[in-house]
Length: 339
Image 1 (tube, one colour):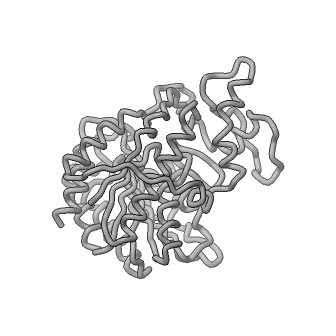
Image 2 (cartoon, rainbow, N blue to C red):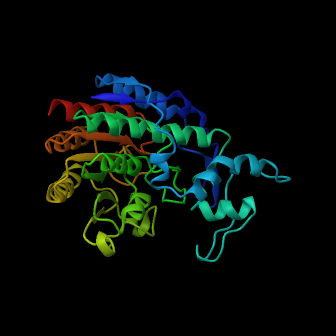
């Protein structure tokens, strides 16, 4: 398995995270890179820098209006008298069909779903290279190999024109679309503790990419408004989206049983490439405390995915700093490799 990572991904260094009305240090810290890279190397992964495929594969999923926003909003924000050091919205539209504001404040509210995706000076550059990392991983598995994309910032909460939940560009979706344009039939399996709402939104009316997500029940857990079992797709996409929400605190046995259901749906889609949106925050030790998967559980997740026998790209999503973050990645990748 080959690894991909670009050093420019260090440049996104958000300081703020607002939850429950409190401002706290942002958990999506650059130090995640150090932990995750060392853990992947422990699993035998060698890294190389991604190539630059340009904006085309990114713009295949993200609107040009949104990409212009991401590239320029920090500079515009700094021109506001008394503005804070990071772009954080303070207003959101009741409907996203009610016009498009000219002001930086209004556009921030339009393009940022929540207060968990602050934009800093280095955000666009880091997000761009995070996406290129996933694109290079997709190109690699299109040749029949397997790959791990250390994509940071993560991406599965990003819609086509909306950032959210630490995410700006939908790396896993971009990778799947890249595979599709190469004549492949990809599925996306999301095992992050949070529902991949951006991924679902991008492909919800499509039948050429299957989206499957295992996550903590959003009735009382982020992202709240998406990820329910009755969300099956629309139009041509009806039946091509599967959500498998789990009760808070679910451990290995029930997670793995649910994974069997997810993989059965992937088989039924008849895909020839698998993109795994690899969140490690389902861990019993993760700060978000949504699910309770153990280190052994992650090894078994990796082994079960290997059993599909498909060219597989693991794209890093969540998983936050804890004593076992790196161990969980090592166990997942070794579980896959050993199987």
